[in-house]
Length: 221
Image (cartoon, rainbow, N blue to C red; front, top):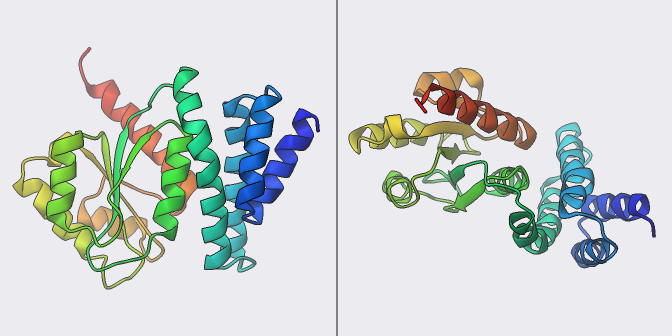
């Protein structure tokens, strides 16, 4: 297969969540001289974006989202060290977690994959993350951005609890706060005092980069 055919097949196999084939195509693509960046930005990420679009239209459901995300995650295991070697600089550090009381992680995991693909170092705290755990992670990793994810309306108030914990620990001004999840809106993000909100994974990456650029431009050289 030529480069175009490999990228096309990688896109298709990621779309249907065929993890073994995605891994095989990733490795064979690299052997054929296709760059890690091409595999990521011309096949894997566009495929995952299409998965998201189909989910929004009701053509795909949670299982399809999950297997596609896992298939891409396998490819990323191969690509991640190569992207680092090729001089793809880390854009910034992002601590991410689903808030306490909520065990949903499909959306969070997709955002993590997209962030990693865009050059962020992602520290994923998992699900059911208490405010104290977010504080510990921020103190340990000193991230540029922290992300709170919630899928349930009943767990959205944890955003405010987390913000209060940041204030109490004296960390609020040291980190950019982003929030997201199915029921979350821009209005709610504003109400809890978050710096940013994104409705999907692609928007999250764009917003994260913009917020980080804005903050760094304000810091004296």
